[in-house]
Amino acid sequence: MYNFILEIFIMISLGVIIFLAARTLPRISEMVLTDSPRRKFRWWRGLPLEKIDAVLNSFLEKLLRKIKLVLMKLDNFVSRQLNRIKKV
Image (cartoon, rainbow, N blue to C red; front, side):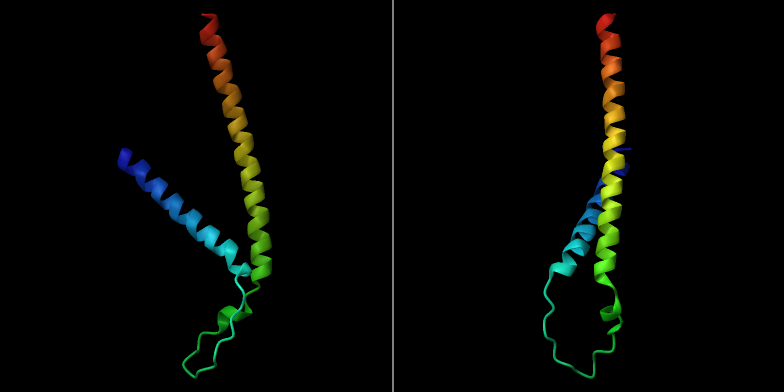
């Protein structure tokens, strides 16, 4: 069971690292690259990175608000249980 939880934390950590790297990608200034005939993979230049960044930001904001709401409900539940135990 502990191995499963550890693997979940590792995967979440990797996801967070990739997410943070994707968020900083639009801030990196575009460098002037020399044109060479070997560079065939230029499809990524057409990606709308600004739109992707805006969508990720809005998704992150909504996700964090929902997590905050769940944590507040959990806090209220724990407080009620503690008060119930304290009265007994």
